[in-house]
Every structure is written in structure tokens, then in C-alpha cells.
Length: 558
Image (cartoon, rainbow, N blue to C red; front, side, top):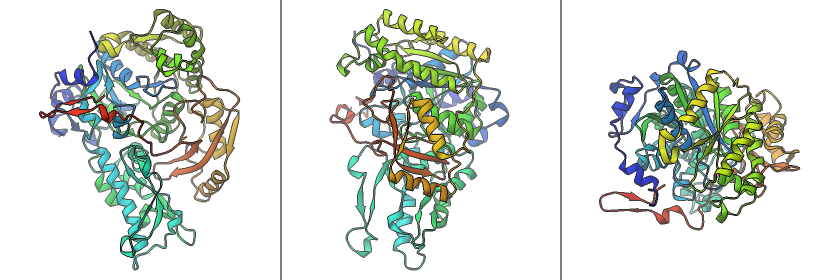
């Protein structure tokens, strides 16, 4: 008998009214802003600083993934189901999915199998409109920039050649990476080179995720760097008086969203930056509200631990004074086969030797987690094609490193398949085995911070900076932004900046092609190798397999 698809499982779920989910967190229904029966916005007044440090933050990350991902979201949701099964008050706090991957290759981000958040279709599509609001706020600033260049009375003397602010849309569309705007005569503006990023890469998204209050949001929006005047003076969004109007567009988007898991446990979903091109974690506000309401909060950071977890720990935790008390490192046997040299068509074929050869990737991630003073628990996200000898090898190999590895079967069995992992996490917290510390000091030199990440986390021998990167770095110092943390833009497919180097590459250099910086969000973005901030669609997009019937029932969404 074939296993049901994610969307079939989600559509069969008997959802509770969102008021009932809120009541499990002691939230009064009058405090909710309802979006139908199963979604609601949470007011920022629920944030209680006095409870945050007393409760338990659990980070879920992963080894270097295959293109389909290794199930961090599924594991995060399943772990919350498991924690509640063993009598703990637990909430999962996640990012919102982007439409680009939904219609591209990776699919949605609502979990999978019997570890999902629902309503699945709504979450994976337009949800409560947060992405749309972020897109509009971003593009309002773009419009104000070009309007100012066109103006004869209020012109700030912006040099169009220096503008770094790009438009965004929430779709994979490579044709929009580099474009020319303003053609068709003087009435249509000044012609200049421009381009689009995908919405999760917008600095507005990053700002929403880093802001700790509405006032903080406005200040950060005002600090967005736009470009320079012909006299080389910097121009910020506040110079265009843009921040208030942008904040108005985000007045609802700043509030976290409450939904539920398949087993009726609370889930807060908010923000959606990618971890390969942005910070890759949900909003600080969502995490802190979760910690204000629940004894255990499980959250995930995108892609492998070299990206999402590194940024979660060095950027988000330091900025918001968060201290994770447990770290779960998700591994799949198919990914270990991949890192051992298996071809894509052999990912689901048992091969102990390939798993042995690929274990070096997981081993390096374990080493990296320990550098943050965090003792990881390895969750083996179970697949039907896994063999017992492969599972036993991973469990035994982790044990030799002093690490517990546990089979996580949330996909097939929901919370019942995650109770062993849940007990291990609670035990880890109770024994106070992890004492988080950041890897570097924000006040260090920019090159030193990049070198620390490249050598300690990636395993690189050193750094190479292009001529453009050196010029960009000089600009960062001139603007006084050099004391910000580092948010690497790097391929998710390898520890290196070369996606062909699988496993645990050695003897390589990291190539910094150029720098971007997010003065409002508060970090420096080295662009490594061939990274793009606007993805393209695959040869066969996932959208081709989707359908909707006359009753509005969707199929093919995953």
C-alpha cells in the first residue's frame, strides 16, 4: 500500500479552532486577530522578557543536505509532538515558506508525513500575507528612489550608478536578476541598471526577523543603505522619508502567526529568510513570544549547520540574548550516501560503504556544534529505504564521538515516533550539558570574522578576496559598519563555496566575490563563489505537477 502524500494527510486532518490552540498557551481569544478558523495573528504584548531565559530553547539543524532537504522542519514538528506526548508544554516556532521553492524543486516548508503544521495549503501559499507586505514595503522604497531621481524639486542628487537597493518578488525568476529600467522616454524615469532578488533575500525580510519591537522595526528600516550622491555622501531610506510608510505596510506582518500541528499542538510561524543568502531563521519576536508562552520551544535554522545554525548562533542569539539549551542535528542515511559518492538515482539504495564514506560530513558538523559549547543530539530522520546495518553504523560511530544518535520516525508515526528523541532532549537540558557561546566577537576586524567562520566552520585553508570585494570592504569601513556580524551567502550543497565538493572537503580556499551589507538588519554579507540572490526554476518545476479542482481542492503541493 502506497504511503499517503503530505497534502492528502494534511487534508484529512481534523483541525481544532485556533481559539482552542491559543487556550493551551493561556492566550485569551480576545487577543487573537483571526484569519478564518485556523490561523491567527498574535499581539506583541504577549512577549514577556522575564520568562524567556527560564524556558528552554531547542535548535534543530542538519548535516549538509541533498537538494530535497533532510527534514529539519519535519523533525522540529515531530519533536514538539513527542515532547507533548511525554507531558511537556512545547511549541514549535518556524519560518514561513517562500513560493519560489514551493513551485520550484524543494517544495513547501510545512513538514511532512505525520509531522506537519496545518492548514498546509494556506501556510505554503499566501498564508496571512506577510510575504506580500514585505515585498510591497521593499518595492515602495524602490519606487521612492526612482521617483527622487526623477524629481526636479526634491532631488537628493543620488548617483544612479551607486544604487544597491533591488526590487524583490517571491518567485524563482532568473530573467529578472539583471535588468534595465526607465526606458521609453523621460516620462518613464531615468534609465539605469537594476535587478530583482527573491523576497526572502530582501533586507526588509531580514529586518522583520531581527526587529524586537515596532519602534525598532522603524529605526532599522530608516537605516537601510540605498546608495550615494554624486558627491559620494551616503543615502539611507530615512533620507527619503521612507521608513514610516514602509512600517505602515508591515503593521500586521510584524505580528507572529499561530497555527497548529497535526496533533493539535501550537505552532508559531513567522518570517522566512533563506539560510544560504540571508540569516535563515524565524523572527526574534516569534521566538521570544514562544518562550514567553511555553516551557519548551523548538525552532529550526535553514540548510546545514554551516549556514542556518552558524547564523542563528552568531547573529540571532547574540543580538537577542538567546541561549539555546539543546541542539538537535538531523541526519539522513540518503544524505550520508550522497556524501559518500552515491549518485542521485542511488540515494534510496542501501549501501553501508557509501554511508561510511559519507559519515565525515556529519562528523564535521558535530565538531562545529561543539565549538559553540553545544552538545548535539543526532536525529536520524528515518526513511523506509534505510537498512538496520546503516542505522547501527551511525549510532555506533556517534557514540564513539560521545554523541547520542536516535532514530526519529516522526514522518511515519508523528509524536509516537519521536518520544525517544524528546526524552533525550529533556535529559540534555536537565543535565545542563550545553552552555552556548558565540564563535567570534562582533567587534573583531571584518576579515578576521570571515576567516574564523571559513576556517573553523567550513574547514577552509584561507580566504581569497576579489578586487571588487576589497573595494566593497573599504566602503563598509568608511560607513562605520565594520562592527556588524557576518552573514555568509554560500552554497548549501558543500562546506566550501564549490557545490561539487561533497563530504568533508580539505585544502580549499573560500572566495569572497563581493560584499553586500544590510545596515538596517545589522549584518555584513560576503557573497561567496557563484551565489545568486534570485534563484531560477529547475528544468521540470514542481508547479507542473499541481492541480486544483472545481471545489478548490489542491493536489500535487508538497
